[in-house]
Image 1 (cartoon, rainbow, N blue to C red):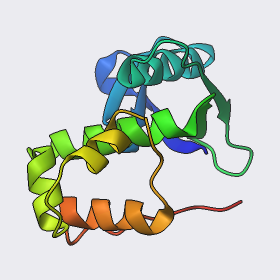
Image 2: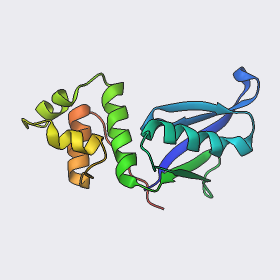
Image 3: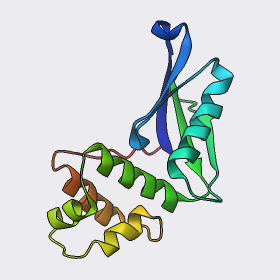
Length: 141
């Protein structure tokens, strides 16, 4: 599983490279182009914050200004995305479960902790519960 990130030269910060990974709420910067992937990897590992998780990153061959990050555990990346998106929206696990029409938070929290991986249908249900107007886009290449 790869997550898309963007980078661009930011003249407002003295020519540093701005780095964004929206799925994980990451905004950071690098001094030079070589550092872009290093900073992205460090930021992803910080957000995932699980012992043993290692991120990698590669520049996109199709699009300038785009890169992809991935790691040794898709389950932990999904967990970080769910946690990030929930917190960005100011929701609790109970809010999500209630919007899904369920009673127990346990199943949802297992996804957020990276103990279980939701199916695509369940992931869509969770993201819709977080924001009914949210439409996730999956890119295949």
